[in-house]
Length: 184
Image (tube, rainbow, N blue to C red; front, side, top):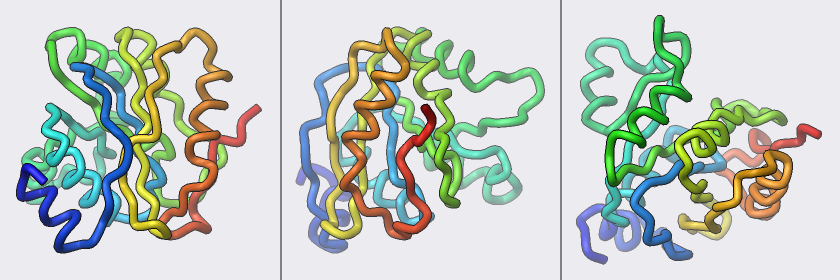
């Protein structure tokens, strides 16, 4: 462990970190399953341990006083329903204006079970010409890590199939609330 975050995650909380985060400077990182607020805590500790420049997309409803200060300190960016702002174009702009940034997104979009993931992450990666890094949290194995990287974004259905395959055996904190993207 090289950071205090990594020490807390592995030694204090007992999680194992698996897989290698790619040596790339910019990406869209999808993080699933996301069925509990604890996922964000463990995800933040993991991202800090990786030492990557990262920001999280979070629903705008969490940005109220005084919570908005904590969310901004956490590295969160509000999305959905903000007048004059389209999350896809905002993220693409952010990625294009920097040489090092990883945007972390939970593609399920909520804690409740969804069978159609919000594919905004795909369009962000496609438009910014960056890969998608697939990161997971598995409560049954008590693991958090990187499943893989998707560089070829030419076929949305093929990307969805790859992602579904990577998440098929992952156990959420609340397994009844997690599903892969079942859209055909």
